Image 1 (cartoon, rainbow, N blue to C red):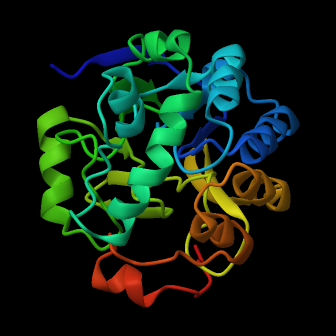
Image 2: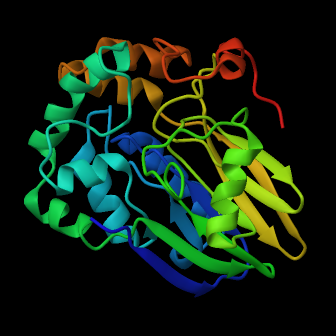
Length: 273
């Protein structure tokens, strides 16, 4: 299926970016409170996809996003659910722990997401474009070329540059990899807010989001504290993977299968911007 891009025009004022809700309703409710505290309206809020994944409340999270009326793009999980496919499409290596685990949590998500929500996924674009602070912005899940492509801080800039060259964007806002980072070269910005549904493998139970400002242009990575105990308890009550519930409680990933060497070496270490 051809990828779709939706242009949402000019955005002014504070811009809230988050991704990877991962069916974690408690984290999603916490980011809503941040938006209220910062007086950021729904038109200035963007989700980078994967509303659904590891945690216990996929349908409730979808309904919150829909009722909130913010901007969202498709993550690979939404695409797979929309198209009634039998795996999460996360681009995990065959036979890896993440791949084996996905065969357990993805069927649970399939069983909980309504047909109405799957129909709604057809309305979501693969990418968003907009103008902000005199810059052309693009929102992707993994990369412009591949929804489930992993782009990290350590990913060679030449790979990122191909995305800028193909789209003429000044700022690319990405998701999917699960870790917050910013990478800037030659006035081109690759910004990843991280995810709110799982911690960032840094030994902290808090999660991550970003706020951009336009007068003058700036961006800040922020930590988000939320009721992770309830999120983990609900996972256990629904017999979801204890390894992921444990991650919510410890801030450490079960494995580093998807991570490059540099990011693997940062496991358990504080993230400092």
